[in-house]
Image: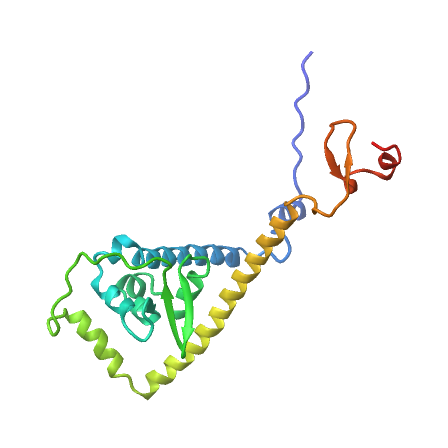
Length: 224
C-alpha cells in the first residue's frame, strides 16, 4: 500500500520568534569586538617582537643606539616604539595598546622614574648596518629628536597622564603573569604524585605500591 504523505507542522509566530531569539544577555557585538581586539593586540605584539629580533637588530642602527644608551642600557624606551611608522600609522597603537599587547610576550617590561622600557633577554647582535655620521642622520631622525625637545607644558601634562595610565596597565600585566605562574606551579604540584611522607599500600591486583588514599576503607580492611 502507499503511505499517506506526512503533514508538515507549521510553527506559530511565537515559536518561530523563540527559535530565532538569542540567549539571555547575549551580546554579539561585544564578542565580535573582543575578537577583533585580540587580533589587533596580537598583530602589535608580533610587530614589536620582530623589532627586537636578531634579524632586525642586525640592521637597525637606530634601535641599537637607543638600547645601548643611558639612562637604561639594555632597554628601549617605549616612546621610540610608538614612533615607528607601523605602530603609529598602520596599527595606530597607543601606550595602553602596546602595554596590553606585550602582556603575554617574552619581552620584558619595566618602569623607571615614570618612563616605561622594553627589553629582551639576549644580548644585542653585532650591528651589520653602518650608522650615519653625526650631523648626517636622515630627516626622520632629526624630527624625532626635535619633537622631544620642543614639548610644551600641555604635552608634558598629557605625557604625565599617559604615564599614570601606563603604570596601572603594567601593574595589571605583572599581576596577570604572577597569577598565571602560581596557577602553573599549583598544577605541577597536583600532578607530581603522592607526597614522599604519604603512607603506601601494596596493591594485590597490580603489585604496585600506591598511596593509601587510593584505596577504599573496605579495600584497606581486606589488606589489598
